[in-house]
Image 1 (cartoon, rainbow, N blue to C red):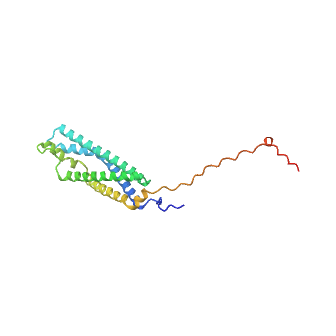
Image 2 (spheres, one colour):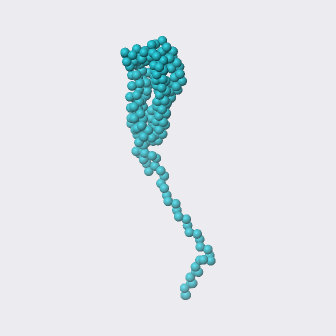
Image 3 (cartoon, rainbow, N blue to C red):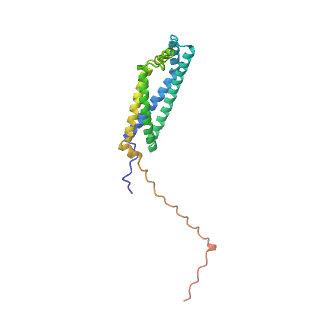
Length: 220
């Protein structure tokens, strides 16, 4: 019997490309988390050294330095979790799970929003002074030192990753929406072989002693 409507089990190229993009994004997120954790101490030290020339009190410097360290750790944790999530989605897509495709679309939508917000924050961090209250000179001076406390390549790296994140999620969402991917994720499973009930065993032969006597021959 033939099954003309059953899609071949071979993974389409568009799904393979989506898996590769997600895997690359996962590696980038994990690397960004590791770099953020490694550079945390130097960033806080540079901020403390630069804040010594401001009019801020030691308590104000400690508060902003603590805020800087906590935000760096939180950024690393979020990047780590995002990398693990993307890796899990890539494995689910590779295995052909339709639920993984739906989850990838949801994550892509949230990732697009987060990437745009992160890009806006990074650009604004360079373009605008970071001070919540212009009348508080010490606080304004401390917040304006935050951008310079990071390594010189940190903000360009974050900007590039944010742009790549937006493009990556967009590419993955489009690839998974193509007809080839839709047909593969909704494919029918291969038909199983027909199941035959096992034949019942033949009854054991009757011993000669228990066989009934042969009937006598009829008289002629």
